Image (tube, rainbow, N blue to C red; front, side, top):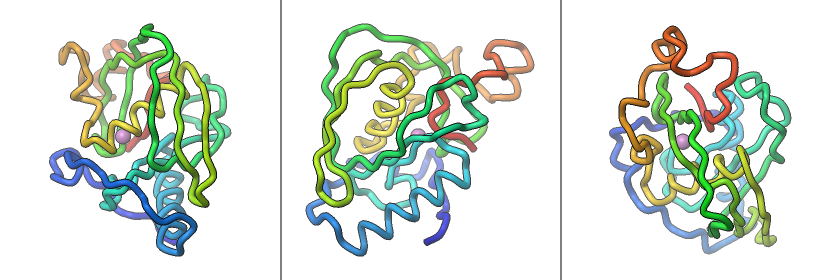
Amino acid sequence: MASKTILRIGHPLLRTISSPVTDFDTHELHTLILDMFDTMHEASGAGLASVQIGVPLRVVIFGFQHNPRYPDEAPIPETVLINPEIEILTNNTEDAWEGCLSVPGMRGLVPRYNDIRYRGFDQYGNRIDRSVSGFHSRVVQHECDHLDGILYPQRIMDLGNFGFIDELTQYRIMESASLPCETSDD
Ligand code: NI
């Protein structure tokens, strides 16, 4: 198991559609997921898609008990989510600042649906079915976008609300004390 290099925006794999997983509980899948957790933990991220480490499969991980980068956020159970499907439960959206390990040093203001239901499988093939809201909902939407080749800058409504973290915090456009919606970080 090892922490892997994270692909950055501009790498063509990040724009591809990832393929469904067909075989569960395999050595290859378990190794991939351990590598993903090592990589996410080393970066203090809240989530990661396998394509970000160069494996274009429909596998995402997310979750944390306590993360110093999101001190105000409630814990999200550490989750492996494979072949996910998202159902939007309400059309209410919320804007919040979001980041990505593949877009290091930057943040953008992104609207996401407040309430979603997500379904999929864990690495053993067990079904997952959860209805969530708030930050949990945001993280899942962000990670699942990766599976369709979408990075969060493509979701920013006004590119005036996109920039480097140090500039955004220095000029108090974004509060440095809480980066509630960084789903991953550099
Ligand atoms: Ni990301």
